[in-house]
Length: 385
Ligand SMILES: *Cc1c(COP(=O)(O)O)cnc(C)c1O
Image 1 (tube, protein in one colour):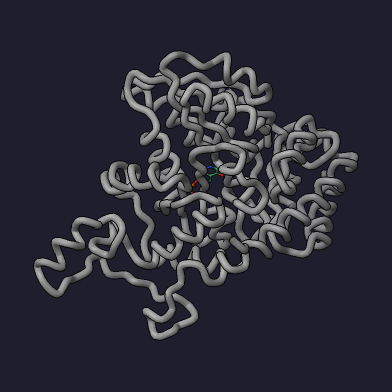
Image 2: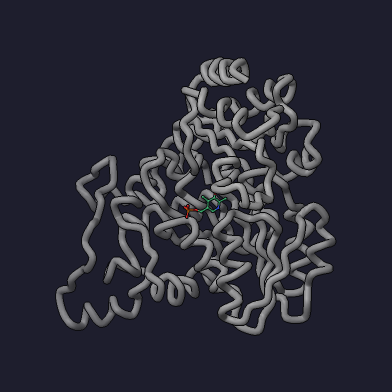
C-alpha cells in the first residue's frame, strides 16, 4: 500500500461523518442499539464493532488500520504506553514454566519486565548479547517460546541480525517480538524479515510531538485477536480516543519528520565523529561502526539518536558541556520535534552509585530544527570545556 494513501486516507470513512476531512474524536465510552436483537448480534462481535470503548472505539479503529499498514501486518492494537504494548505482547507469548531469550540491554522497563516481573509467574529468562546470531540459538532450550529483540536499542544502538534470528526461531516454533521504536516503520520493516510481533513506543516517532504517551503492537490477525480478547480487554491499558486522534494527526507528517530527523542526525554524526573533543561516537550508519554492514542490510537509514562519549576528565566537565546547550533541551524521551540531550551522569545520584555505563556518555536526539543551528550550539558547548 502506498505510504501517502496510508497517512492521508486509510481507515477514514468520511461519508460516515459529514465528509469531514479531519476525523471526529469519538469520546463515547459506550454505544447503543435499536433493539435487544441488534444488541445481541453486536455483542457477538464486541471486539470488532462499537459496543464498549475498552474493546473497540472508532477513532482508535482508524489508527489501528494505519499502524498495521505501516508495519505491513494484518492488524494492530494501540495502548496507553509503549511499556503497556510491550508487556501485553510479551504476556500473550509466554506462560509459567516456559523460557524466554531476551537481547541484553533492552529499554530499561523492558529489562525490568524480563529480569524481575516475569519471574513472579515462573518464566525463566536468558539474556544474550545480540552481536552473534548463533548466540540466540545456543540459548534455546526445549521450553523456549519467545525471543525478544530491540534492534537497535535506544542508547548505544547495537543491532541484531533479524533475518538470521527469525529463521532460526521459526525452526523451533519460537515467537519473535521486536521493538522497532528507534526506526519507525519507515526505516525498518521487521515483519518482512520474519518478526512475528512488532512493538513501538508511539510516544516517540509515531506521534512525534511530545504530547502523548502511547504504544502499538502490530502482528497477524490471529495473534492480535487473541491479544485483544486476553491482555487488551483484561488489563485495559487502552489509548483514549483523544490521544488516538492526536496520533492520527502526528502521522500525517511521519515521512517528513523521520526523514528530516534522520538526515540531520547523519550529518551531525559525521561531524561529531571528527570532533577533537569527542572520544567515541555511537551511530549505526557510520563506516566506523561495527554494525555498519548489518545496518545497511536491514535498515534504510539511521535514526535521529546519536550517543557520544565526551573527552572529559570528570563529571563536572560533562555537566558544564550539557548545561551550556541552548538548542537541546535537557530531557528524557525522544522522537518529537525538539532536539534533546540526555547525559548518563544524571543517573548518578550518590557517590556509591554503581553506573554500568560510562559517566561521559551523552545521548543526543536530533529533532526538526536546522542542523546548522544545532551544530553551532554544540560547538559553543564544546568551546566551554
Ligand atoms: C520510550 C521507549 C519505550 C517505552 O515506551 P513508553 O511509551 O515510554 O511507555 C520502549 N522502548 C523504547 C526503545 C523506548 O525508547
